Length: 240
Ligand code: GLP
View (cartoon, rainbow, N blue to C red):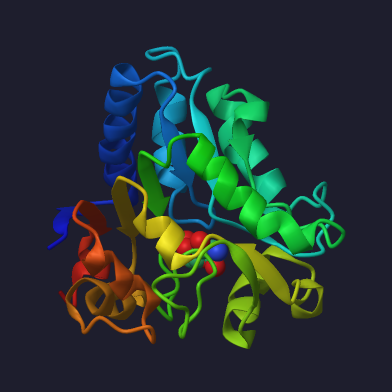
């Protein structure tokens, strides 16, 4: 059963989770963080930024959850750019210790297994940050994804493309494919920290935490994990 912590605001969630990250890095300076994109984890990165200097983060390693396929890595909305801009730069992480799946079309054939190998060689992820999509997706594991899945190329659903259109000039500019850690990959992290804010996430969150274990709701995979902390505001917790 996941530990559910209800906090009064996203900022309070950020403070709480940042503390857990700093505690981890104090005990293990080369800790491996699982980094999430989207708006949900931003308060965590902000809270960490406020505390840069308290702990040496230069040896921390990190693996992003996912990336678009076929996007120029230099595009401001590639997850490579987002992670660099919002996490690596502000926190002073060492760029070559932070990996994002390779979404370039040329390398795509081996990108999944290369990424899995890199995570394994790093000793696995210690703490995985997670947001959840309105349809219950984790990373880009859309409904129907196998609980055993590993890093691989997927087709984005029209709903997710529409949701992410806000980051692009138009929905037509949103890539159609992505490369994402699988649910199996995510479940191998030693500690999962799932964040959700706002009423719009309440249904997916309740289904993930309390609903039946089903591939139709990828977030329900967290019920298979022995150590999950769910940090939510009142609105996201409304249906628990
Ligand atoms: C994208 C990301 C997910 C994220 C989800 C929710 O699809 N690939 O990792 O959890 O969006 O986004 P947000 O946190 O902005 O609500």
